[in-house]
Image (cartoon, rainbow, N blue to C red):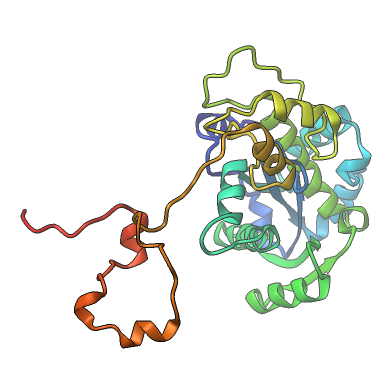
Length: 299
């Protein structure tokens, strides 16, 4: 899998795809959706779709695709290579969501939790297939959250398509298994070849599994936290494990929302209404205060 585009810029999101087989534009297709890397504190999350004509589904099953978690890395690589060889009827696309994107989304002013990010990414990939001319007739999705709610949401967005959302769909439907293999191969390769934008000395790339409860992963996090600037962008700093290490190992920061002196004495709320306008300082809107913006009197 060619991830050079991701390696050039791994700070946001990156979409990769195979060519669309001609037959997938003509015949009704089945499409599967799955992800890899939802839980780890390190590395990207990858969402993938895989699709093929309904008339060729038996050929996809003949590849012996299975839930990627049950396969070894070499088996996943072999099956992905086989799907690439069968590019005359099998297509795929994926979205790689960087750790930085995930964390800034979750900790932004308007909260965008991981479930919502996952749902929107999956729906975006289905729409991408449609925009590329794939004749999608059925969609099977490995659920995130309540399958009934998720399925209803997707069905409303794609009313002309039969949508099925199930737990463990990657073990139930071969087309979802194929998507899970695409996602896992891409994530493994992205983690292995991650390009650190930070200039780290004596970088140890033995991260462990990347999951928050892995002692080796925790040790790597403690070793690579910078007291002022925090973690490299390889780390999802919104994860509780990362936040706990930051609180213990990094320097504390005091954020001042208001100028010094404006926080002295809260007083009674009724005093606000009793004061004469001239006695109460006029503070700019919080938007301007937080960004250090002031009114310009001259140009």
